[in-house]
Amino acid sequence: MILNRKGITLIELLVALVIGGFVIAGIYRLFVAQTKAYTIQDQIVEVQQNVRSAMERLLRDLRMTGYDNDHPNSKVAVATPLVVGNNSVTTSFELNNTTLWTIAYARDVANSRLTIQVTETRDDGTVTNLTPAPEDQILLDNVDAFNLTYGVDQDNNGAMDDRNANGVIDDNDWVSAATVTGGNLKVVAIRVILTARPTQVNPDMEMVSPRTLRSAVTLRNLCLR
View (cartoon, rainbow, N blue to C red):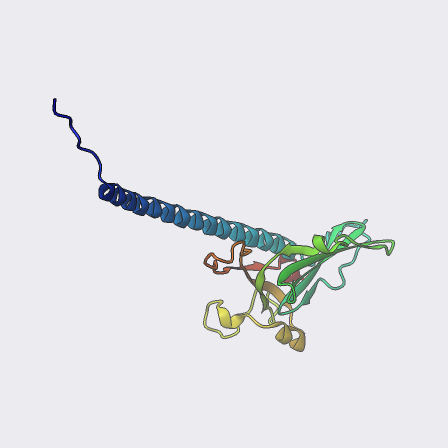
């Protein structure tokens, strides 16, 4: 009787183990790369949504600048509808016949945050800060830039001036806050540039670039003044 003594040699086993190790390592590297890509994409989506949400709230409040319903029973006067700044802006409008809201947006440079402060003034002189806690004042974290420029109406025709007279509204037609205050110019539009970055949750991962959103709003209530 002849026995079949064929089997796997030690060398063959080692080769198989090496090949298997390479395959497993490749699969692991692919898994890590996919995990990083998913995390980065998730951060991008999150920061885009946060920037968009902050911008929408800012533009909504700016559209209300100077609103006064002129009702006979109204006890509110909007004396200062707008306070301009290059990195801050304050808007005031009538909420109802007895209430004035003043909302201030500004970039906290030290903490890289966009903050909001809402003040309610009643007709009886009562002033209430509706955002008393520091956490209530944080509208957006990791803000790299919050820049504002202004469209003005010097000829008082109710529309933004084409300051360089080239027939279109372009970058050169927007002015700084210093130009507005220095010339006591009437503001009828505001352009906002807001840049924020995601929170870096893993220092070993590639830094996600900041996201920038630009928008402009016409201050309809001021156009009518």
